[in-house]
Length: 128
Image (cartoon, rainbow, N blue to C red; front, side, top):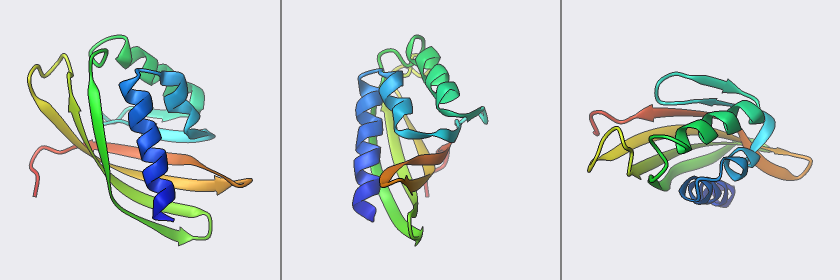
């Protein structure tokens, strides 16, 4: 099942880099949740879309994100947990810096379709 995680994460990065909040949110199940690096909690695809539309209209409008799946494993049939490293350039709040985050994603298969169910993103301040 790790291939599923890589595919979804690649879609996430692609949507981010296109600044397409609709495509970004479409990767989540309708009742998906998202916790961002500042602790904001979005519940449901529409709230996730609205959050990303707002940030991509402002400080992330010129950002580029790279993402790498560090590990992914199927916990039970139809549920994957993945840890993903992100590197972000072009954040207007941190000019010239690469911002690193580590995210945990829960990926669930429903009616044969894999999407994100939950995401929690954390800023990496002191890499190991």
